[in-house]
Figure 1 (spheres, rainbow, N blue to C red):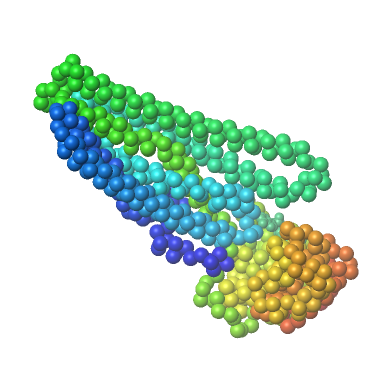
Figure 2 (figure 1 turned 45 degrees about the vertical axis):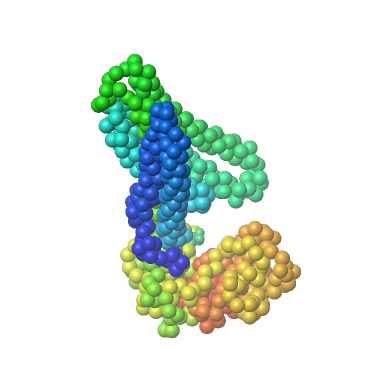
Length: 566
Ligand SMILES: Nc1ncnc2c1ncn2[C@@H]1O[C@H](COP(=O)(O)OP(=O)(O)OP(=O)(O)O)[C@@H](O)[C@H]1O
């Protein structure tokens, strides 16, 4: 089911990291290219500073216009090259980051699509929407800004140091002393920042999940006068999120303040040394006696550039914490849970043989802590049979239907359809009619056809006895989640959907007449029986009148199976 629209192998081949891989390490070469280009752009400041210092020095020594114009021209050319390189590097990094995000999202969506709808441990929809839509976006600044900034911060300061050292060992020493303090403090802060970001993202996810859940159940909340309580809980959650967001911001401000302090100290030390050297007060620290104006200016121009990459790293430091937390959150969506049966592509061609359904010694339980929902179950449903599954509530009737549909694999034993495990071909021939079918936003006809050809619409509506309702609605859209349709009409819509699919050979119905009045239940029964002519119909039901219309009745018990031919 899930793999029908996403090929994980393809995504991997395109460079997506494996599910659960905590670091974004796939195809790092393009990011390294981007970082190299941006580093080259930043390094162009060194010749620019040299040219500027030379021009000022020559002017001070009484040079003419010629000594200023040529350096000015080259400074301009280098400036243009620097801007172009910087823009190109930024674009490459951004493109790569968006591609990586897309692949990560695809993997998470594919993993979610594989999760069985009967898996109670599936992440809440609100949390999934928050992670996939909002939190995942934090990966882009992490990749496009933090990783290149880290590369620049590790490459540029040493190169500038190498340029300054031959002129003045004191200036180089001042920068060298200030440099390691910054990464040290950043690392200490970053360690706290990631934990804070993870907590903040978790709080965002759970607030979204809570909000979506309560919005869905707004009618229940109002009818049970629980609005106040819900609002109090929502306020508490929002307060919690506020506290966590402020904690993240506090760390972000702290890291900026620490960096600014050390950067300012470093530049100030160099400026004081250069100033006093030029005034002739200090006569040490160079390899060749006195510091000239050109040399002093060159050092002064390079000192802020020495700290610039570290400053940039600090400004994106928070992106790293948030990005890594987002990667973790996205990966958590790919955690293994109960998965639907793998639908092999080989079996995806329409099946032409008999659709007998066979249970061979099938056992199933939802998780280790629960008792078996089905234990050692053996049964054969021959094609075209109409079977009622009876049994006490919780006996395992819905579970049996779910196993036929391949919504989960059996723990032991086999479920075979036409002698083969459930595959795409068998799935295509199945219709599932539950008690509360999902109604999509849109018209009634659109909901019945689900993209199929309109030619079949009239017949499907007539079979489900839904033509009157359809005529009343016309092209008007149905209310959200089918508001405006009665329970019986929603069920008829589900029957019409099945009738609109000509490939249906097996109909699985889970208590279709529950909660309906006797007349509507009888109508639904008739529609289902008409739909099931020449097809297999397996119905889990507590309705004795419906069960009496079936060809066979099977009593399901947790520990036993009793079959009774009618
Ligand atoms: N998604 C689920 N996750 C965990 N346990 C489940 C899940 N669905 C059902 N169960 C448990 O499995 C057992 C069988 O449930 P099942 O829904 O198959 O019974 P049923 O016969 O269809 O019941 P009913 O007639 O009330 O619909 C029950 O103990 C139930 O609590």
